[in-house]
Every structure is written in structure tokens, then in C-alpha cells.
Length: 276
Image 1 (spheres, rainbow, N blue to C red):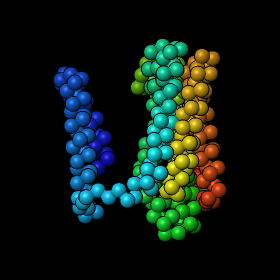
Image 2 (spheres, one colour):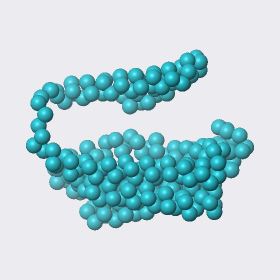
Image 3 (cartoon, rainbow, N blue to C red):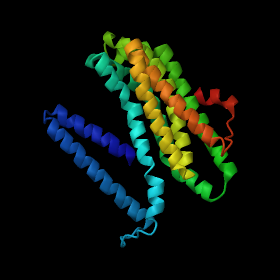
Image 4 (tube, rainbow, N blue to C red):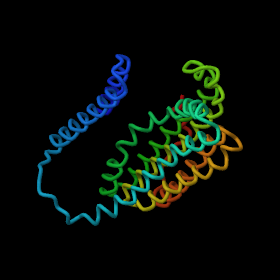
């Protein structure tokens, strides 16, 4: 369903623009498609879980608020971590450099595609295992997920180092080769980002959302400060390094908390097999 929604919206917008229907109509089509997708998703969920409309019950509101409100900090921190570099670059280096940086960043961040499928199921999966008291199963599952993601990112990192130059030329022009160092750094940053996301889901399942909110807000703030310091000195490379720094620190703190709860069983000797 997610593939249909994402691919459908992309094809719809691209078709409307290619037919010369204008940006307004393209945005309208995108909004309608997303609204339709939301309706279909809710209807499928209702039928699958046999849900019925009832009068609202506010008895558990305090519990939901204590769990959900700290997650607002996650949104703020994630936005700062993801977009602060562009704002700093445009102020110091100009719009053209933002475009070059964005192309290199997007190419290096392709590993997020490997993270999305597992990230969707981690929270409900871990929640069920925690409620069932299956601690050993959680540690095995966590180790497998970490192994899979690190191996996939390692393969992308190798590709970026040896074929990044050719890949940039394939999708852009020679002027975009200024971002080649960013292309090589971002896969490492995305590896840290993925570990942060995986650890976040464990803490969410443990209902430690206050820790999650604080970690993500700190990650975003570090990214802003690091970009302000690094971009004027190192340019786009500084923005890439700032992204790596913020996600690495965030992942480090997150896993410091997680490892106090669990001991994931990662078979490091099999990482190379998975990567291959």
C-alpha cells in the first residue's frame, strides 16, 4: 500500500507537470491522492481489526499524553537535523551550492530506502515482544536488524567511494562534482541515522519517550551549531561532517541507553556475507 501511495503520487505529479497543467493543479492532485490514500488505509485498518465507531473515552488521556507529548521534540529535532545544513549553506555559500549539496546528499542517503521497511514494523514488533516478556527474542531480533542495516550501508559506502564520481556525472553535470566528498560522507551519516532510528524504536516500545525526545532534540541542536561552525570554514564538506557528527552523537547516546536494557546478539563475522 505504501509503495502504491508513494509511487502513485510521484507518477501523478510528474504526469500533470509534463502535460503542462501547472504547479497549482499538480499540488492539488498530490493532496487529493494523499487524501484518498489516507481514506483507503483507514478503511482497510477498520476492516482488518473489525473496528467500530464509539463514543470517545478520555480515561486514558493522561497516559497517552505522557507518552506522546515528548515525541513532539522528536519532530523538532529531526527537522533540525535534516534541514539545518541547507539553511546555513544558502546563507554562507548561496543557492547554487545548496543545489549541488542536495544532489550529493540525496545520492549518499539512498540507504534510507533499506531502513524504511524495517522501521515501519520495529515498534509494533518490539512492543509485542516486550509485553510477552520475550527478552532473548528481542535481543536476537535487534541484533539481526542492526546487522542487516550496517551491512547494507557498508555496501553503499563502498559504492560511493569507488563509483560516486561516475554516479554523479550520470545524473548531473560536472559542476556537481563539487559535492563528491559529501556523497562519500553521507552514507556513514545515514548508517548512524539508521542506528539512531532503530534504537529510538526500542525506547519507544519501552515507553521511554522522554529520553527519545531529549536525544532527538539534542541531535538537532548539535547539527545546527556544527553547521554554523563548519560551513563557513569547510563549505559543503563542513555540512556533511556536521550531519555525520550529529547523527553519530545521537546514535551513541541512544544506544548507550538501549545497551543498559538489552544485549543484542550480533554475529559480526556474518556482516561481510550480508553486505556481499
